Length: 216
Image (tube, rainbow, N blue to C red; front, top):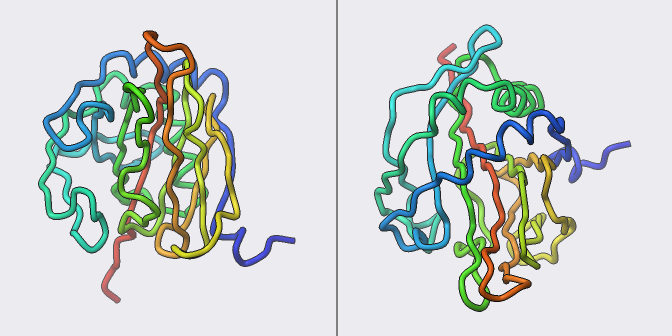
């Protein structure tokens, strides 16, 4: 029987085919001029599901308020969009359908997608410079795609900001954690390269959405 706490967290898995299809696109993520842009290479898009297909919505900048994001709050951030070829591939469809189904989202629900490569710099590199946080949405999913030459990066989930984590897991190869972002809190441990002078990284997708309130 699910406890109330675990009802707010779901762990699932992408198929090997989806991971194989999605993974190569992380090789081409750009740096940005933002505070984390040297080590969190990123693309960002908003999509919606319609009749079993993904529609790429017009591009927009990304901003979070300072009370949510103490690291880059009230900063308007611009990211290049995900490639259309990636948006319309079967692996992306599988990932979005899992997120939509797990949260019972309607077809017109906008879904924000962050594609990130967190690159290991000299010493420890923060994966979650915001600390223990919520992202200001109702639903969030973190999907590990690949890890290379790193230790650390464990994904942590908390029932509140001052509690000890009740989940600590290393997300990789399509492992997907879906949580109620307005109830639970999360962060991740820093990463560090195992072999110095060799590239180390953690590739992840982060999906978020805030439910549309329809007038009655």
